[in-house]
Every structure is written in C-alpha cells, then in structure tokens.
Image 1 (cartoon, rainbow, N blue to C red):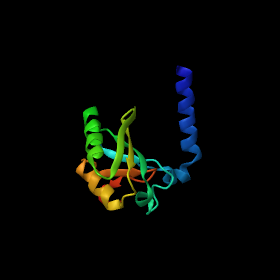
Image 2: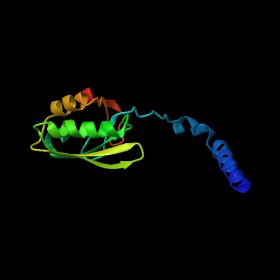
Image 3: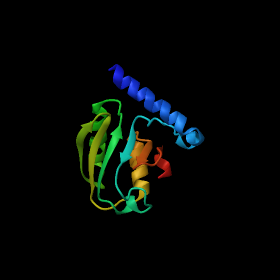
Amino acid sequence: MKTVLRFFAICLLSVSIATPAYSHSMRFSLKETPAKTICIKHPDANKPAFFSTVTVLHFEVYKPDTKADIVNIVDKLSKDPHVQSCNVGKQTGDYYAIHLILTKPADKAWFVSTFKSLGLNTIKLNNAEVTDVEKL
C-alpha cells in the first residue's frame, strides 16, 4: 500500500514539475448535475431537428426523489395521446431509464411542455452542459 501511495505521489509531483507553464490549460470545473435532470445520449440529440423527427426515445432521469417518481412519470406519459407506449427501463446508479414510443413525431414545444409538466426542468444532451428544458 505504501508503495502504491509513493508511486502516485511521485507521479503527481512529476506532473506538477514537468508542466508548470501549462497548468492554466489543465484547469477544468466540475458542475454537479441537478436532481431530476433528463439525460439523452444519442448521436443526433444536439441537432435542431432531433426532437421533431424521433418517435422512439430512450432517456434517463438523474436522481429522481424516489423510484415512485419514475413510476408516476411513466404513468403520466402513458396517458398522453401522443404516446404509444412508455416503460421504465434499467436503473444504473442514480440514473433511471425510460423508454418512450410516440404515435408520430412531436415538435420541441411538446417535449418542453411535457417534461416541465412532469417536474423535469433541466436537460443534458450527450456531453453538453446541463441546461433548462425551455432552452431546448
């Protein structure tokens, strides 16, 4: 154990000695994702027309208050006339998956109003920063 700790200490020391001029470029900030954030991982999610072309959407909700909240979200979505089916998917850590199938593509306005009515006010598309659903 001491050997491993010494190794990491030497590595950190050598990095800080070897790169003092570049330390400003190595800075980064960690922003915590707010609870009840929608997370969509799809190669086209950042494109403007994405939401108006999809009929099948897999997304995750980060840190809902309880598992019952996910069930309520799915129940409310299932009752929407635009929704063909909606199911709870796999839970991975603090992320709860939801599988949504629409009867036909819906526009961004439908997604924004639907997500907001479910209490989901923030969204993260791929590796982009978390933003308000209204700015979709």
